Amino acid sequence: MSTGWIVTIVLLVILIGAAVALYFFGKKAQKKQAEQQEQIEAAAQVVQMLIIDKKKMRLNQAGLPDAVVQQAPKLMRRSKVPVVKAKVGPQVMSFIADAAIFDEIPVKKEVKATVSGIYISKVRGVRGSLNKGTEPVKKSRFQKFKETLQEKAGATPKK
Image 1 (tube, rainbow, N blue to C red):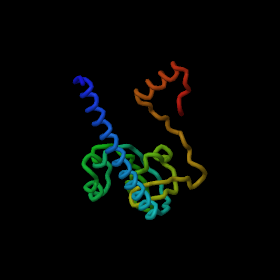
Image 2 (image 1 turned 180 degrees about the vertical axis):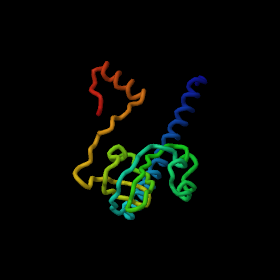
Image 3 (image 1 turned 90 degrees about the vertical axis):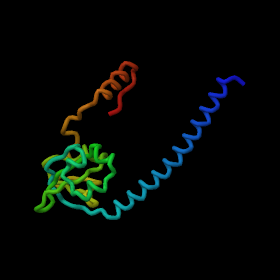
Image 4 (image 1 turned 90 degrees about the horizontal axis):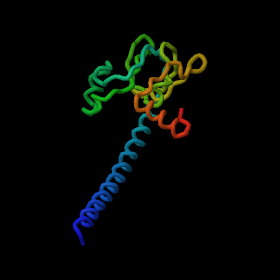
């Protein structure tokens, strides 16, 4: 056997080992996420609130309690999270919203939100429906480039 074949066989063995390891780590992470979602749903309660402001900002700049910031992993402190500032009763509080519903949350409107601690998981309007899409969504350069490539190829872009 030549050295080229030996090198490719070794690389294939390493790649297969890495794929198997990622498969098992992925399954473990998926189980953890399912358990956490069950805990969130168990502690959820519906709260009526007036949304004052919403932004994506770093965890340590969000105005959240110090205990929350200290419990978060160090990498999470640097990443941007969707933060919602809302008035619940007489108090103004900061919440962390689910990334999937962050765009649906209207600003300066009253909503009924499903809250678990400081985490907002669902939102629905108090008076009528939520006005989705009132704010124009900024597209990143990558998204614009991707859409132009799709148009040139003749594919319809996803909306």
